[in-house]
Length: 150
Image (cartoon, rainbow, N blue to C red):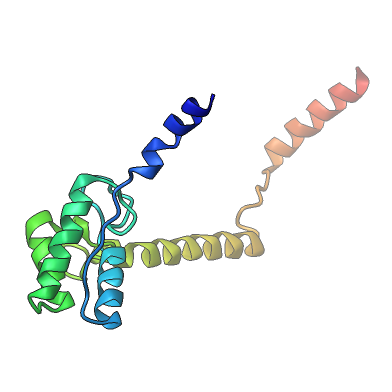
């Protein structure tokens, strides 16, 4: 029984932990911020800091290497975007290709508010209520009278 428990926790005990040497706490915080802002190309919905994918580990090492070389955050991000595409960013740059991504939710909200306002205005003015002409009213009266007789 003890052997089964030991085997169950063996994967946890041998999990790889990335350790990187930094000159100061500011570099460590920069590294942490960059790895939280960039997406794992394989996992797609995890940032590099949380991903266990081998590509994420490689990218963390690459970010560390670029930081040690003295690259700025923008240069590191540009390097990864050039290599993996705009998808690697959680917050893509605002440009001609991404304007709909940035403005789309606001435009949809405005459109929804406009439709709601128009419907409320029509209801308030009575445009939605149906009116029957004299022939339809006579037919309705006949139908109602015939159901009352039954």
